[in-house]
Length: 371
Image 1 (cartoon, rainbow, N blue to C red):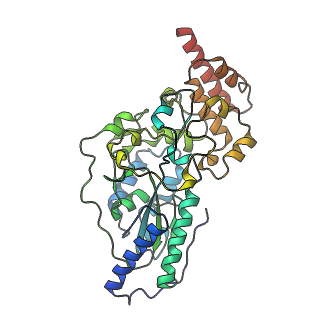
Image 2: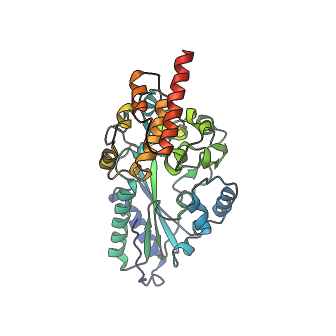
Image 3: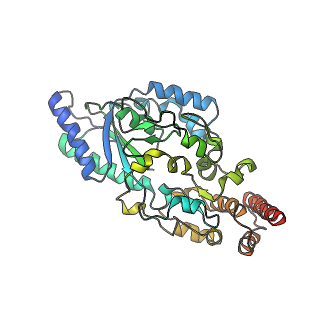
């Protein structure tokens, strides 16, 4: 994804402390005016989070996400990624769509597919990036040309660690950022900058306490310890990041989750305080809030590419999409409609899909023989 960086540096050293404080306040006000849910500022010291990252990588919890290891400590040392970075402006954008079908009702109806609530509408990278760029433009109008680079999960950035340090929330036991009055249904974005701005304090304490609801709710027990997620077991990883065959041991637990998983967020008590999004782009498209599995499985590749244009789902590709749906169909109730849908693709030339369809048909046969 294209990223913006302007090399010329304004004369920030001569700015008085009062002016710096005023500019920081203005930046937060502009962020709100531009439709961002919150904005805070922090420095670049992420040493504690670097240790956590390196331990996570050493344990192999990143699975086949080799880019996590390839970029290494660039994630935790912002000035290595973007020389001259002195401050980070961290922003939040709420995404939970208020008009979507009830998530728990979809999860309990095995004829439907469950799509993570963040992915039902327009690709958030584009939506958030535009607002970050608008914020940078507003700052430039005030300060003159300054150095910055905008990120929306588009480069090696520890965005949750940055947001936690800036005081936007804390990292919960499920490894997502959350807040006691905002929940966790939001995206994060950053402006790395050379501006000398006052920083915001982190929240003084974490509030998860003894709660382990997220750990207990995880269908595949991917939260192996508080604040430690083994991505290789995570349904979001399996359905989005993993190419090829999904391990058999996780397929039944995946249920009807065909793109991502929200279980850890759905049970988090703090999400009862979350605010619905006001961004129309995040409203469901193509009825992805409660889609019928059989209908989705009938899409041609051309239909997939057309319907998923501008969607984050498109990046996983048509065949991984069908692979995920095949598993969900194998977990669906036995019916002639489901059997016919799977049988129609049983002779596919795609080896990965062929294996998953065969597994699904076998699962349905087992259900029929034991009913």
